[in-house]
Length: 520
Image 1 (cartoon, rainbow, N blue to C red):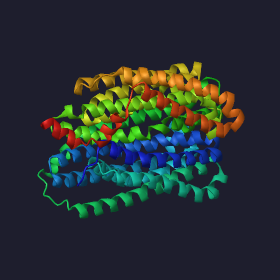
Image 2: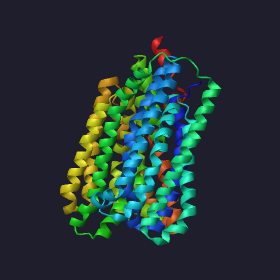
Image 3: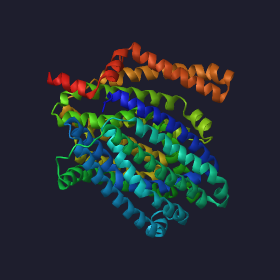
Image 4: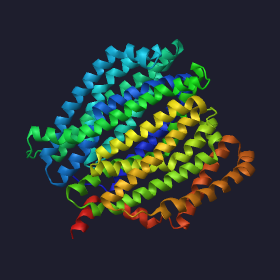
């Protein structure tokens, strides 16, 4: 088995992520046009249930499998890898089946008493069918990610989105005219189809990979030892994700209700919720494809270094990853601060510019936190992650409950920003204490902010003066985005925040190279 470099692995996932997100935007634009803001709000109200089920059945096991596989592969214990994977599949599939039965029979109560919208009932019952397939498939993806064999998960990622879009395209005309309840159900059917096809593909890929590489070495750990190894990592991770999902669900339930106390009708509050959660937030997260992939590949890389007690070897990679995250976040922030209204109208034909402007300020913190998550998971700081996540959610809920009735949706965004600043501060301190990375705030923040301000103000002037009058709104916007990103990157390089050598070294660097060099 040949290991890829960290960034090489990340780039494979990034390519799939970019394709998936582009397809996802086509999907969201299509859905927002046929459902409207209120329908998107109902759909987003149901999605936390999906996220909660994934958190319970998959989240802790996905990262755990990735970490254990990486550590066992570093020691050459291929038999242990297979034993751990089989145990994890049995556990997660059982949990997924239990969740399916529970949601199917409690869907009516959830719709009436928690969502206070009976239109969610049909979608919840359909959604329950996806959980066992989702659980088993996630474990096998963790196996491939632990080996840094990212091509299969990358193809799987694109396949999922394609299946969802095809299912919705063929079913939309049959059900959407019957009302929002059935329109939302069509979207959920797409999710079920996606999970079934995804599981079948990843299972076939695993069997083929196993036969080619002949991973037949006898395990050196007993089934009970493998179970202990899995659960000791998965339980705190799962608890973190479950509590986070529960709190996120509470936030999503509270936002429309507290907006009504601000003076909005039930329909208006659901529309505002749909705009921010179903339109603005996905747009803000769209540029994070590389960072998400990099975070995923950092988990097994850091885990390998930790297993061999050579964390110093991973320090430069972590530092450069934070640098890329910071530059990406500040660049994205400049985009959403310069063209918020234009982006909202061009993509969704909805006046969400104010939301995009405020959320844009959060981009540097959102993007850096993605990298922090991968590093901390690789270091095994799951309990710390749980505490920080809990603090973040509590801050959000306090702002929603007490300030949204007075200040509206802006109070929610202010609370989110406050929680992000607090979380990033705590996480960078923990990482510094663990591996003592260089805190290069000049290159991480100062130089990119100056570059963003210079390029943003210049492009804003050019767009208003020349691009929009000459090229029109949409073509002018595309030209403005290209000019902004190109100028920002040029300024970042000219100011010395990042150079070609930085990326080349990270791209060529393999975890085993760094470990071998440290040993020498």
